Length: 277
Image (cartoon, rainbow, N blue to C red; front, side, top):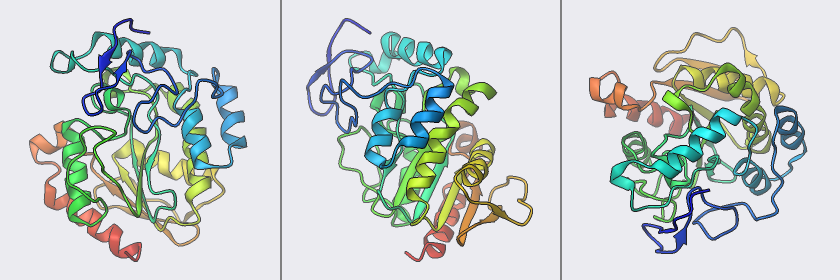
């Protein structure tokens, strides 16, 4: 843990980096005694046993099952980016976030090192978040167009955003083992929300594969042969759920025009209609 405590940019409360569970960070679901999964086998066990989203979020937020990711997320939290050197960093796994009974579930890859790993909330505090949340707002899925920090008042009345891998990985590239280790958390999230979800939006090719795996492990199946990932590709899941693919709102995609605001708006407009919102 970092020794220096710094003020949270919104509340002013002092925190070390990484943030200790149960010390008052906005939206922290964990307590000092929350059970910590330290191995892949323990993730499987804990994910299968969890029976409520708030409990899932708490246990996800303290997971330490991937040593490389633990080392990286905490190193980033201590070293920081110069522009955020005066802020504490969350430096822990980032939970799913949004409605407890979502009609639309949005799946991304992993938290950004200086985005979600800093703020403690998925798709918050970086350029990808700016692009995604603005589109969700235009589609009526978010109450505001910005996502700055975990205490900024943002809410998703009918949507939930999750990451397939819950820790920021070096080079934005989790290893296959790390992806497999984290997958039970996503499967548990699907098990606890699937009864309400009508549409899953997968942001990028890895999220597309993770969403298909999530459905199968969670007791669902793909209707027919699932198409390869592409922007606007769709697949039918059991229970009348539609999976829609979208290019990820990474700077590589948005700066080059591979993904434009109109393209992402089209995805969320389709999701809203299919979800009956």
